[in-house]
Amino acid sequence: MLAVLLAPLVFSLSPATAQEAPVAPAAAAEAQPAPVPAPVPVEYVYVALTMPQGVVTLALDRTHAPLTTANFLKYVDSRKMDGAVFYRAMHLDHDPAQGLLQGGVRNGANLLPPVAHEPTSKTGITHVAGTVSMARFAPGTATADFLILVSDMHALDADEGNDGKDPGAGFAAFGHVVSGMDVVKAIWNLPRSATKGEGVMRGQILEADVKILSARRTKAP
Image (cartoon, rainbow, N blue to C red; front, side, top):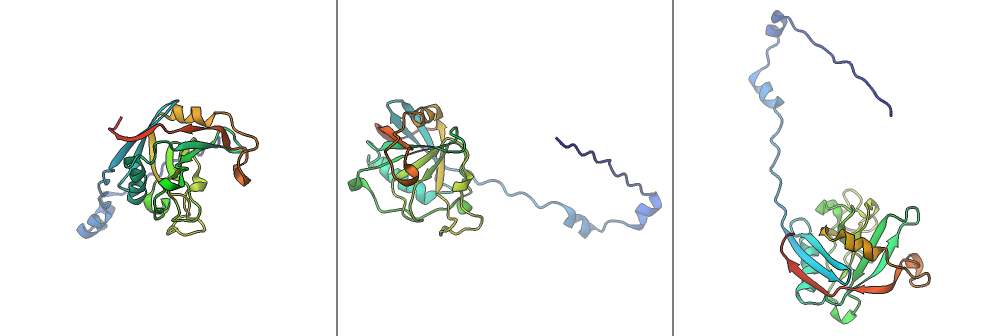
């Protein structure tokens, strides 16, 4: 580790010099730092996902990702998320300790119209361990497939300034796990099939789906 030591610079002014260069009141006012605006309170909606392995509680950010949160809650409130499954456990090739868990509604009859894309460049919700995000094809095609990150994956964030259009639109993060990451990791570490899946998903599909027994709104843990 490179340590750089900076000697303090000492400035001395004689009384005469100090009097010759007074600070004007206007200049002194301009030198004051601008007041920092108070942070906007975040409104979270909590959802408990119950699986055979245990309960995972999500905090959905209604303040910064209102469209994506509302879309997910439609599936929860209509009970369409009941019976959905976790089916993919992606372990990164370069570091198998990193990756994500993917699941959602697989019954096409239960799918609702897709939700407009809310990029991380607008929401400010980045893809770190525990983040909940929507899976998609093109921006604006997400329905009920979602991701839970086991590790930081900033490659899923939108490019800076991106308005939600490809390329560089990233994925729509809309909340995070507040309890039950041990359950997430237990499912993520279940056996994976060597033959299931196509393309990049080959080798990432669980041998057996894990069913979401129920998805319900709940109180903050």
